[in-house]
Structure formats: C-alpha cells, structure tokens
Image 1: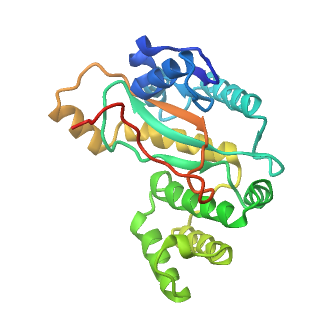
Image 2 (image 1 turned 45 degrees about the vertical axis):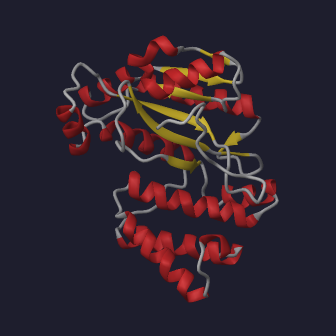
Length: 261
C-alpha cells in the first residue's frame, strides 16, 4: 500500500504510474537517479479504491504501512513527527495516474500543533517563521480537510492586517501572526470544529480528504469531459517539508528545463 522514496533510494519507479500516480512515480524516479528529493512515501491508488469499497475507511494494513512510512521519513531526516524538540513537518498532496488539475489543494506544514509550533520556533531560531507556518496550516487544513470556506480565513487575515496597519503578509510580526492563528482557531470554533492537535490524526484525516476528492463532483466531471476511464483512484504523497518562508535566503518556485510555451 505504501512505497517510500528519497535520499537516493525508492521502492517504486516511473513505470508504476497506475499504482503510484504521476507525481509518486516521478518522485520515485527522481530519487533513483540521485536528485535531491526530500524523503517521503506514496500511498497507492489501489488503497484509494479499497477506501471507497470499504465505506470510506483506510484499510488497517495500509494505515500500519503509513505509520512505517512516517518512521522512514523520521529516520532519514533525524526529526520526530509530533516531537516539539525536533519537529518533523510534512506536506500531503494528491496525485492520480492522469493529470487532474485542481483536484485537491496541497496541505503544507502538517504536524504542527500548539506545542510543536513553540518547538519549531526554538529549533529554527525564528518564532515569526514558526507562527507563519502554523497559520498557513490552519488555513489549508480548515479549507481542504474540514470543509470551511477559504474566504473566511482570507477575510480574517485582511481584517487583522487592517487592524494592525500593515499592507502585506510579510509585514506581520511574530505577535501579529500569533493573533492570526487565534483568529483562525476562532473560525473553527464558529463552525463547531476544532483543529486536531494529534499529528497522526491530522495525517489520517488529510488522507481521507485526498481519497474523498477522487469522488468529488469536480473530479467526476473532469473525467467525464476528458473521457478518462479505468483509473482506480488517486495516490497520496506525503513528503518532508522544505520551507520557502524561512527568511530572506529561502524561496519557492517552479523550474522548467525549457520554455514550456
């Protein structure tokens, strides 16, 4: 059910697209050829099919393999999932065998909670970075996994910036970002929801969200319009985080080997 990759090794390869999805197969292949791929694991498309065949339940054997996958990332990185002293954060992404634009948004910084964010502040040397990462997780997790309208988080952020008198997200201080996190948690409370503090529960529910997105109206319409048949489900890619918001020497972007247009 789970194939690991990273740091020059991979259990899968590019030929396994139907099982690992396009993203998972390519992550495995890039790991095999020695590119600097942060470690992670891919939950197979067949596990997605089993999930839907069993009343939206992750098979127990697959969950056990996912726990082993987390342990694989911990071993490769030297960090601990849910460990405030040496926090490991991960991203969760969907990836079907065929390109499905916009099927499910990515979740970043999964593994943070009220304790781990304090540990990340100490470990990184920047409390501002830690709380910026936490407010991003609260936003993404709320909208992608918990079904809260993303506009509610956007409105709260806009209102908070107006209150403290800054124009850009980058101008928010550590104290401001703590306040944004509190405002985001209040949005959960208004919806009679709470952000799960257990990182493994975060991972379980995020995996449910990826698998559920396979049966969404948007996905079904895309497959019908593009006459996609015989695809069993989407894979889930869980990967150690690399940060673009750590400071002035960090960034994220997309690299092409040639002009795509």
